[in-house]
Image (tube, rainbow, N blue to C red; front, side):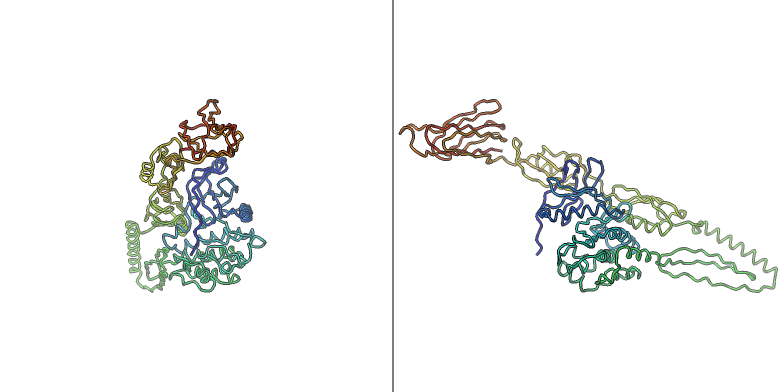
Length: 591
């Protein structure tokens, strides 16, 4: 049974080292929580990953993490999320990275499998990025859809090199150490053996399989079962209709022996590019044949098709001999009239397209990558804009020209993508009751968590702090943390004791009242039989020097004096008496 990790508090609203302001949580993994943030010094949006505290308790792990972050900062490629900074704040170890606007491949796959051209395009971009890391001798070791980000422009970026290691050297960990995600783990990882660029090739193979099939090849829940399947079992067949070239690439990438796979991501990327180039472009030919006695006249319209129908063969007709010149002239005149009539009909019906004209497809509901791939095949370009919408993030919601319109080859279409629902401004909640604040957040489409905190001088149940603050903008259903004043109670503040010597103790009171609980006993005999001269107490305000109260410590235990002075700085001065006595005093604050 898996062991649950400890819970860590949300840090939204804080600024790490006074520079990196944390906003809403945009992701969470084994090693840390990722926040959308802002670099206050450079005035730019960033992603900030704060490592969970129990990982940094091991100083060797923290040093290793820092070395890997420095290493990845040197791997520069448009397909790799760039690391800007690393540091340590009171909130913990963190690193600052490029903020990628878009969605993860795992989010995209929740809608189902991808069309083969889109899956091939994403896999090729992913391989190109990994090839750059492999050139620096860095192996990712955790290639999975959650770590593959698709930008608003349809470009692929891979992030979270959290368990990346040098392909060779001493940073690969102790022998037998198993790291990675079981559903995407190469057989050598499952066995705890050294990893190579071929390990990442296997991960890309699993991701490509999932894009084509809508699920990974193995889906058992238990990590041990998954590892055994990756080590021993062949993957199930891909869906019918998968292009053979892609199926062959998946088969080679998922070979159990690393030596049977592509040696690195560069070679797999090249194979994917060749698979795209080798896809057949089927054509159909509509023909109208007109043949006179002396020559062959053929009028043909050729249109590209993607339905797999084979081209129609144009059958050539040999000329016939005609020995009647007058009939030949009449035939040619009739033929000319027929051609004119047919062409006029085609133009009137909107069927005959100008040379280089393309019919605009329906792009609604497609991702940016799918739109780009589809238009590219038609010889068209796309310019993208984003608008708030309740449609899933990143899907096309509008296009211009409309579907079915005819445009010139090479034209640019304007496509509007969903930016997700509009952000919700956080209302001012401090000073409201907890129930009122929660109702306001619910009405605004936000969630809330409430924590009771001591709050001297505040009515219990009133919100005293909120995070993020009023005016911050969050995605719908984000959570706002509320700090609510709890009911006052006695809280131990300080204690001290003595045995005949004087004593002076200052302390700060936060509540509206406080109390002193004293215990005293005589160690010997009083000065006289009926007269005891024990220690005495003077309570003063050290700021003004005024005496608040003074009295003798009476014998016995648990004697209580309550003061209603309100908050402020106070001091208890103990004067030793003439008689030998031991005493102790505790101070409790009420808030």
